[in-house]
Length: 66
Image 1: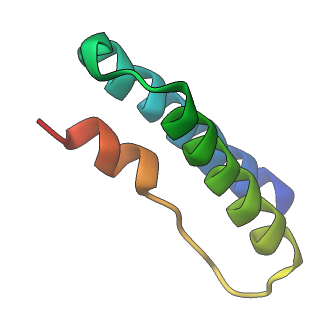
Image 2: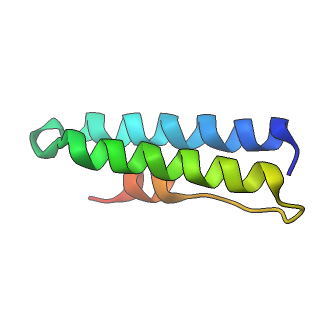
C-alpha cells in the first residue's frame, strides 16, 4: 500500500480509539490501549511492504462497542 493510504487508516483508527476510550473512562486499562496501539503499528508495518490493499478496523470497531 502507499504510505499515504496507510497513514490515513492509522490516523482514523487512532482517532477512533481515542473516542472509544473517551466514551467510558471507567473501563480504561493502559495495557489494553498499549495492545491496541501496537496492533496499529504492526498492521502499518505489514501494509507498507504489501502490494495488497489491507484495511484495519479494530479502532472503529472498538469505538462502536457499547
